Length: 501
Image (cartoon, rainbow, N blue to C red):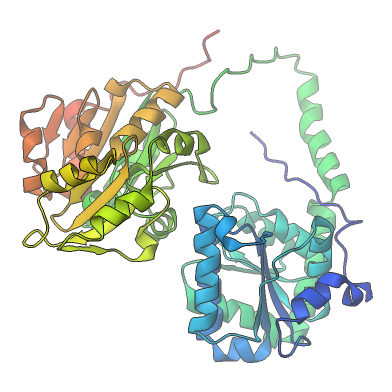
């Protein structure tokens, strides 16, 4: 395989020429700012948790020096009313406004509601003319098209070290890579661009040269032809395209929880990661967690856990597929059946011993409470009250203190089975690992399963009599490795030499 990066239109994206100062979008940005003449820290992205806008705002809010030197301009899609957006976008924009208020950033941060497609190049030029910097703080970035657009506009960049920006900055030498979880490093890198005018000019010029050499459309066409021409004389017959998704050669899959399974023993985690990487060509790797997408991506990065092929978050309320971890909208439509969250909250909010968890732990398809078993009704009684209120839902108790309510069709187990059906992986060749009550339905049925030794005994005791469930002697990742050996899970794992006709 040879990767040929796309190009950018150098007639649309170019250095500032003065005309950008009179564009309507310039006034839209300036109306937010006390001192519009300051250099601009520009971020352009969708209002998506994976874009990590919240960490950028916190990095800016925590740095008095950064606030003194530059304005922050966040262009996150278009909106008329935040309440009309999907739940993920609502969360991102609400957090943006709350952090602006928390750090008292009024007059220092611009967040225009609308922009046209043809105004994006103008925003880059405005930032470049101000002596500013473009920042991409995403948790993961498969390529980073905005980075080459910014570079073509003469704008230095600061970008996540995860994914495509490594190649872009490696080719253009026009900025700095950062750990998107490290607010101090993000602020320091932005200051490194903004404080030294000679360095700024050098980075801007290097970006212009790098884009022309590597990312202009003529350069793309040249690279494409250079890659294709040697193949034309071989006369090898073209392979028939496969009819399914790209990873169909994966004939098995391993799914595990995060916190209960992987995070408690660093030594066994390193061994587990090595085993997973060795078999990545023939076995899919999945994570099923109660965490949100943003939280899961952060903790996996922190512990150097390989990015999974499929990421099931919020206890099965969301399914995301690599590499961009876009949400599976078909799954979303599927679980929306008979789901009325406002009615669920109306019933549960009145019960003693239940307290809503923070907003960060809630989403459109997951309602979460802290539960005090000494005061709250039993799980059976809670289910009875919900059914009495015509609410057909899935209620889960984890670690004796977390109560989660999801649509009837949503759970970790249902999500794993959805994946198996969509990707054509037999359930008998899916190994799932868990250790708490939220994992129980994932381990029932035809899958192979392992309960790690550091389990919550009370919640999983009923599984002891179920076939195809292995109770490991070891805890955390070592318990999963024990099960892999017990089932000989990777024993016949191989990549077919060629696709079936």
